[in-house]
Image (tube, rainbow, N blue to C red; front, side):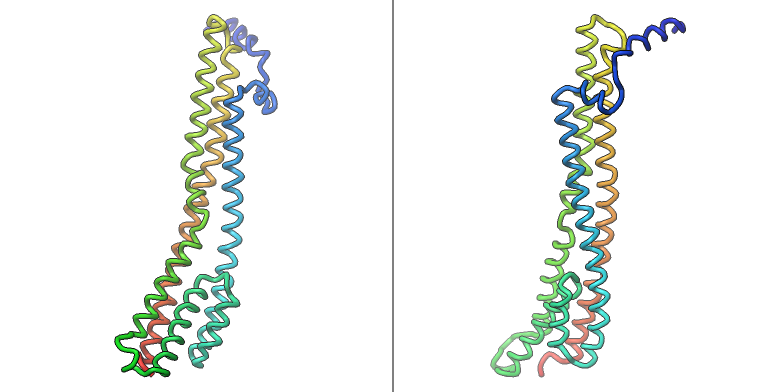
Length: 245
């Protein structure tokens, strides 16, 4: 292309403002709706990320504190104190799991002491504690994963929402060419800018959401490993204490 032709094409874009405010003014209603939707998705993902970061931080801190107390309580057979401490460390999934298991163990021991093994029948204390631990672990895992589904939804759908804006922008560009009779770049610059902005915003929303989702999943897996470990240790404690008083 001749230098004069390039100069002419660039001159034809002189009426197009490529600043953020300028592109917003040039966008159609649909493109603006797409950007507002992406902004809402970003705010949702940001709220989930901040809430989960705070929740996981408190869970980790309370879990460490409770585990340090639990060792002494079990060594000294202070089971009621261990259950009470679990209630005061309510942000710890480990404390909730241990508290549920110990509470079931205490109630089972009381039943065996009051009624006796023969009166209780086929009641298996260790099995009862193990079932209670499993229920508590499932419940706490669900709590730890709260909000992650929405975060994953933002991460997977934001690029497609941006792509939708891109397609609409390209359609507007061809319409501009058609209405302008195949004119210069000014007839398509607005539509192309809408397409590029929608794509960029969609990716900017999706990438952090996907990164944080994977990071949070790793943290949840870490908590699950810790809950399984502490549940196994509690079962060992119950087995050492004996199935019956």
